[in-house]
Image (cartoon, rainbow, N blue to C red):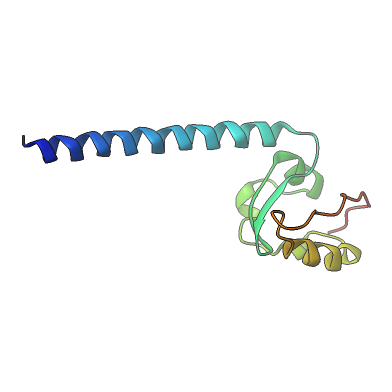
Length: 107
């Protein structure tokens, strides 16, 4: 094997190890979030990507697939929609996110 072939192989192994470490870290984070007794929804521009078990149980869903790709606005009370919409456009690097509120959850 040439020196550049060896270098490329080493870089490939390092990238593979980094990818595996990132996957492991993601699984650990999901496990932690899933065990929280509060509702956790991860979304992108209002499209639900993941929810924890507390969300599923609270809203009466059996599995994550029932909510993935649904609109966040389908599971929150109408009174929250304007607040959520405004928070979705906050750049936390430039401005602070308003304090969380607590309210009755409607579906």
